[in-house]
Picture 1 (cartoon, one colour):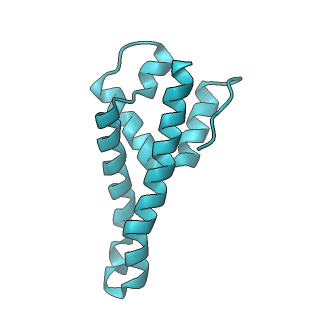
Picture 2 (picture 1 turned 45 degrees about the vertical axis):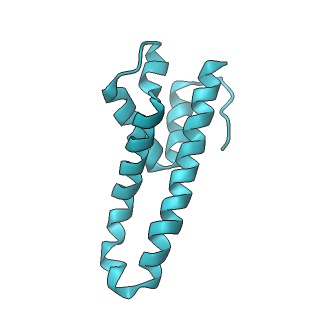
Length: 105
């Protein structure tokens, strides 16, 4: 059951990060013409927030796959995946956890 809670938490964070960065960073960029050249920064903001929350919550999907203890490297990689967005995380989980129900965030 712990695996499903970690996966569900990862999906929830990925969805929230994707949604909130789009709302808090993307919308101002779309409505302020001088900021339009900086739209590419959104993916780095998402990655930073994802890594930050991954470190805060100590989420390590790599450790979950290999059934080991969480490491900083695994947490950072998981944070990058979470920051990338919920669709990316859904593909990752579907590939490494075949046959298990995938919680939808």
